[in-house]
Length: 230
Ligand SMILES: CC(C)(COP(=O)(O)OP(=O)(O)OC[C@H]1O[C@@H](n2cnc3c(N)ncnc32)[C@H](O)[C@@H]1OP(=O)(O)O)[C@@H](O)C(=O)NCCC(=O)NCCS
Image (cartoon, rainbow, N blue to C red; front, top):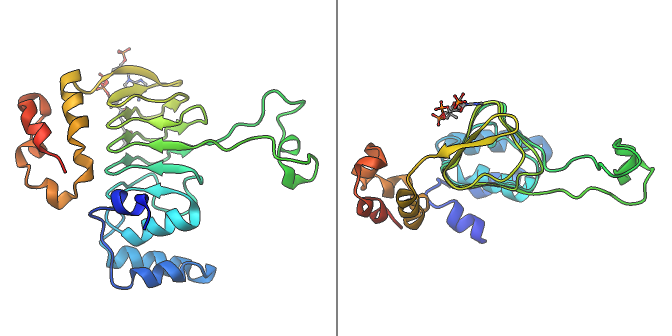
């Protein structure tokens, strides 16, 4: 098992038939059946380990435990090369572009950069990658362009934004192009949250830290946040 499976999927659910559904997915005619079965027997999109394994293995997209939305759990909705951390929320209509048409060639038309169309001898555009970090929240109808490689831990992207650059941890950004609005927390709190790495815990493990889950962090001593750790 690789690092993606072990750490990213901690707490996700796997049914007894999960491994079989994973293998059945190889057969195109059975793909919908395997996905539906996995979702039904492993809770739902928040919890299914098998669907996450399918996405990773067959489609090159990582989705950590509890992350949901924006059709990120649907094969093909996110391009190969997208990696989504744990506890991430993605709203409807979010679109990710991992490459642009070349701007410095004679033409931007695909004839001039896509080898498969039979004109040029080699592909001219490299695919980028995108990491959406743990606990990020990406709002409705956001567009993320190839200029953005990382949306930080706990970051928020406002509805309708066009994200063209990396977004720092805990930053709230919005607009087209997305601009920094503010950080969610005071630097001391951000530091405590980052130290805790709470997202490595499963939801069951997190329940024991009732105070940290129930209240705004500004009302808590920093030690409570730091305690909430794997
Ligand atoms: C970004 C958001 C979280 C609000 O964050 P906030 O820090 O409370 O921001 P405020 O409402 O105080 O606004 C701060 C500034 O950002 C602007 N702003 C807020 N959201 C914006 C957006 N989506 N696009 C452009 N500008 C936005 C405000 O107009 C304001 O500008 P001003 O300072 O010039 O007056 C919220 O506006 C938002 O977009 N939420 C996403 C909703 C969504 O997509 N839900 C999907 C279902 S899960």
